[in-house]
Image (cartoon, rainbow, N blue to C red; front, side, top):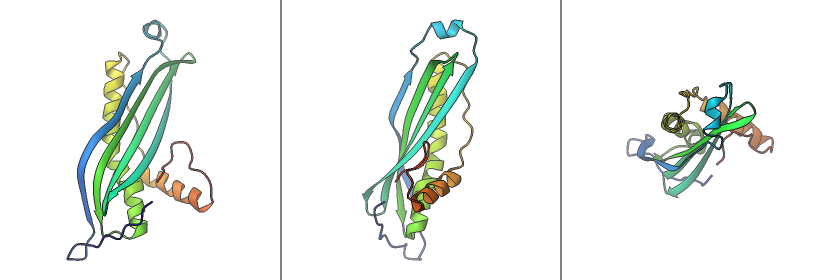
Length: 162
């Protein structure tokens, strides 16, 4: 993560602002349509999460949350839906540990409902039953990321990356 030397505002407080939220990438694939609609529906779902951060300017960062949902039915891929939801955030006056938490947990938590809505919409437009993704504990994922980094391990599948 880039070193951030931004200073607090005149009152000594941290500054946080959402500058922009946007979709960077969106895709839906259903290789077995229409045959999948004629089979008994017993779906198995796999959800993958990944976050990336990039400093754009002093005190300005882009955070991207990648969310991939793969659903199989009878051991065949029914569909794959993917979104890369991103945002540009102003973060000034934070200590390095606080900044890491903001980028690795707080900002992805803001992005997740937008990504979840995009996935739900894609699945519905693909002709499949509604898909409701459970909330994600980004604090726990970020804590696991820090633990693995301290132990010199690679981030786990679905973890956070910076």
